[in-house]
Image (cartoon, rainbow, N blue to C red; front, side, top):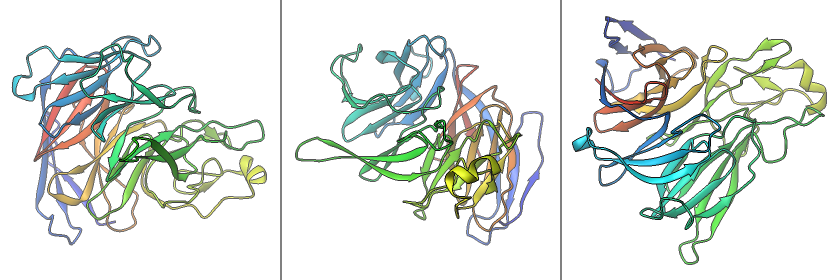
Length: 340
């Protein structure tokens, strides 16, 4: 991977990156943060609709209180109270406007319904229920052309193999004639493929939270380029293909899993990945537990990264919006603009 040089980190946590990737994205990137919206309660995923409005999911209470909401905000009047579109959700971590409907990922179910539907959600349809998970949550929702991506977090059975249907990335398509939702697997072998992104060159990336201990050692978190139909290693391999002895006998050894694009410290908790505006070889990743937004350069084979923003308590979700990035801060209840 080409060298990314950090320079000029100020007390305002802005930074600049020198891009020596050889692409036409050269020059300097500077990211500075500005709070645009406050007063939210545990915001998770943020999306920008085609009409420019912002939609954000939030817990609106304790993690297990089942008081979650989906809000609609007017970016031209950020001080106005948001409109509650859905209420009473169980830990909503993902939302998407897809196939002319509002889709929501909760603790263990994926649902769809009218964009302007009933706030109590009684007009919604459950697409997938009782989804296997690791006891914490699922992840974000990502439109990908004519399909919608979601993940199921990984849980192990007593013999050391994943619970069927867990630890995988999935794609939903909707039949235009019937409206029936079809679900197909994309890839598996993930502990928690929380956030996903299709870049302009066609590569599909996912973050991977490999929380837990393997052979008595914590596992690094990752950013991974997804190879469809391939087992990406967990639990036989963690981090950048570190073989896990305690699972190799049950699973037949460490598979030839794809290498990591970037490796983060154990427990960093990468909850989002987004493109850097105007920099095709650079991706921004939010690290929830370390309180950092970092940049990964995707050209080459280094697994390093550079910290470019530390102004959020719990950076949750990044989304591109024109020439800036928008970031939700889960703890502070804010939406932050990161601008070059």
